Structures are given as structure tokens and as C-alpha cells.
Length: 265
Image (cartoon, rainbow, N blue to C red; front, top):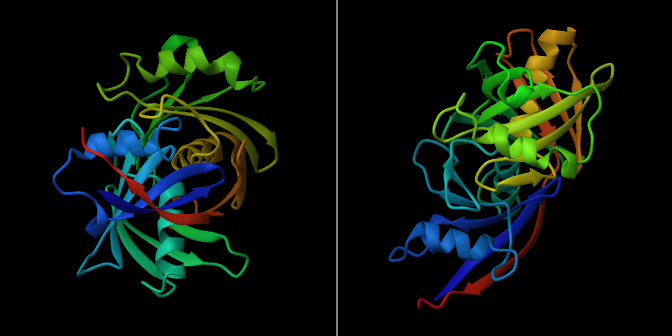
């Protein structure tokens, strides 16, 4: 069985993108996702995007982590999907699409970045301290724990603590993504994000960065725009005081389209 797919990334957060019509119907979705996302025995990716047709919107988008678990929103993946649909002449600019957390709008900019509207985040907890890291549980389309560190050390130094926070009993059975951040300078934030379902740090996470900016803007009285820096690159956030008009601006890149030959055992 041959599966047509497209490989893409946003600030190094990489994805396999498949049109729903090309996705196998008679094989477990989880099996296919695990196989394709495997970096040693498959194509390799942090997650998989499935684009479906819609009568109401330009398209519907579903995101799955590399372990096969569904997530309501992947903003980096969403920008990739918008770029794919636009460059393949499937949509015009001023894109309207639906993800698991609601309706989003997007524009392809002249500098090849994509501006994507973000639904206003909300706090899901008061101040808590899982594993000794004080912070807040925030829903920014996906669940994120946000904790400030005076100095961001290397990912190797934080990996065990990130895993423990991710599975901490303070969160639901599904757990949480974990974001460590600090304020580099006025309106610039450094961020490291550990993603559940991938079970590792990723080069970039736009929904995690959204949660961090949402909280840091209140804590430090930041003004729009705010820039975040992750290992994979920068994102810019434009927002009003109430986050009723909020946008994430960042890059995306289509790498190649190919076919994966899946042999059912």
C-alpha cells in the first residue's frame, strides 16, 4: 500500500501531512502514525497532520502526536497546513480553517511567514508547584504548564524534571506539555517546551509559546508585539489586552512530497 504524504516543518517542529482521502481506511490510524513518525524505521516526524474537506471552512485539520494520540491544536502544524493548501492552489489567502479547539484565520505574508489567529488562552489552575516548579496550568488550545526559571539550563539538565511534571497528579490523566521560560529582555522570552505524546523537548511549540506569552504579558506588563525564542527559531505574537485579537506569526516550510510503501504484516 502506497501512502502519499508531504514532509514539512515550522521552526524545526516537523510533520507528516496527509490529505484524508489518501489516508488508509482499513488499517489502525495509530499503527500508521507510529510507523510514519518513527525516525529510525519510518519517515520521521514529531507528529502527523490530516487535512479534510469542509463545506463551511477552507479545510478541517486534525493533529496527532507521534505516539498516535490526538491533540486539539498544533499551531506550528497549522501554519504548515495553511502553507501547503495555499501553495497547492487549494485555498486563496485569508484562510479560514477548523481545528479541535475552534476556528482559526491565517494569512500568508510577503516575507513567507504565516500569521495565524489564536483563541484566547485561559488559566486552568491557580499557582501550583508540581515537582517544586511554581507555575500555572494554561489552556492555549492544548494543555500547557508554564514555569519561569531564572536561568534556562540545557535540555539534558531539565529532561527528567520535565517528564515528572508532564505526568504529575496535578494534571488530568492525559497530562500536560511543559514550558520552561525566562525573560531575556523587554518583550523577548526564551522558551524550552517538552511535549507530551512526543515525550521529549521539541525545537519549537507555538501553542506553548502562546501560553507563555499570555502569562508573561500579565506578569511583566508586556506590550504587543512580543517575541519568543526557542531552539528552532523565533515567533512573534501580536495581541490586545484581552487577547480577543491575538496572532502568532512565524515561518513554515514544505520540504518534499513522496510516497510511503506500507506493508501490512
